[in-house]
Image 1 (cartoon, rainbow, N blue to C red):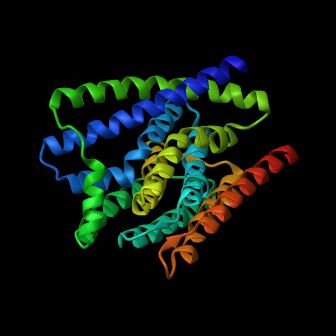
Image 2: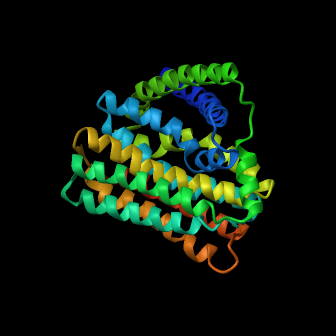
Length: 318
């Protein structure tokens, strides 16, 4: 148990290092080969922070730990809204200026509902996984088109996020370093998590939902708090929505497209509805003043803690 915990923590550290390095490498290489800082920044804000979770879930899927991967994918979405967004808003109220975030929030709720619909029979078929992947491609097209309508201050802020050194050799080194960190980080987490969970009497799904999802999100939480204090509410909400969409459409959709994905009994009845509930609660918060206040951030954090308590009570009752 102690050894598994140590390997788990070391894996999280490597994921954090690898995730930061691969984002910088991707931004530098994209701009090196002709992408504008705005386009590079837009994609990084929306999906860049999901790469560590993607690597962990891919590793779990390869070794046959689908429940762990499912728990991490959907648990990460709940963590994104309840913990990351909630703590960022507690640090400083989040003012949202980017107009494309509203339709993306609608897409996130729709993607969650679609996943529930696909999972009603207890399995996500390969064709349903392919539909989710195609939905992600369509989302990218819409995102890039609507981004052109953003105001100049928003465009400048997004472009500034992607600014980094574009030297080819430096970014290849960053990419190699990220690859090593992500590979071993994911490997150690996937190896240690079931042992860690077994010591607590938790199922692989619950391990993915709680320690893995929360652990892999901690670097994002720290980055979100720092961004909130700099007045970058668009960046914080963009990370949360984009990462959540990536988890549902690419991670879950990709796993199902490779082979039919069986869902645990509670997944469609509890975890996915909880993920939708956390998304829907953002609508009244953003309506009108387009700001998530400190009080609303506290509501999100309390709701997140309540969800954890519910999961632990249910596992003890089971």
